[in-house]
Image 1 (tube, protein in one colour):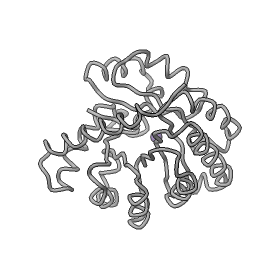
Image 2 (cartoon, rainbow, N blue to C red):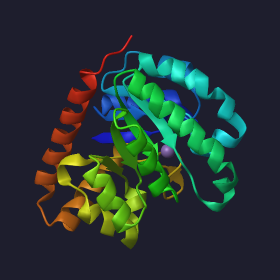
Image 3 (cartoon, rainbow, N blue to C red):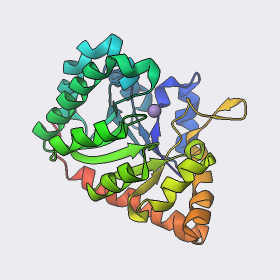
Length: 249
Ligand code: MN
C-alpha cells in the first residue's frame, strides 16, 4: 500500500494512524502544510519504517503565512521531500496569487540550490502557473503533481516536462479525473489519499485506503489489477531510489 500524499499530522488520532500504517506496511509520504509543523511531524513519525516526511507551505495558507517561506527554505537542505507546496487559483485564494507565485518560485529556487528535491505539488485552478514555475526552475528536482485537475493540454505539457502524478480515490471518483488518469504515463503514477481532507463515508480517508486506486486504474488502463499493483510498487521504488541519490545535510 502506498499513499504518496497524506497529512498524517492532521488526523485527530495521528499516533494511532501511524501505528496502524506501520502494522499494515504502508508506504507514506507525509506532507506538511507549514514549516512549523515539520518538527512535530518528524517526532510523530519517529523511526517508523516506510514513512517519509516532506517540508511544505500549503498555497491556501500563503495569504496568512507567506513570511514563513524562509523557514521552509531553511529546511529544504535537510529533507529529500518538499510539499505540500504549489498554487491554488480557486476563487477564495485568487487574491493571494502574487504572494503564492513568489513563495513557489522561492521554494523552487531553494530546491535547485539544494541540488534537486522530490516535490509534492498542489495545482488546483493553477496548473499552468505551477508548470510555468517548474519551467523557470528546471533543476528543482522531480515534480509529483498531486490530485492534478488541469486541462488535457496542461497534462500533456506536464508529461513532456517529466512530471509524475499522485492520484487518489477522490480524484478518480469523477469522470474528469478518470479522463486525466487514463492519459497519465503508467510509469510515473503513484497512489495517494490526501487524507484526512478526503473522506470515505463519515470518516477521514486512511492512508491504506489508497488501495482502491489500483482497481480503478486497472479499469482505466485496461490492465489486470495485479499488473497495475506491480507497476505502482515499481514506480515507488524508482522514485525513492532517485530521492535517495539527492544530497541532504
Ligand atoms: Mn493535500
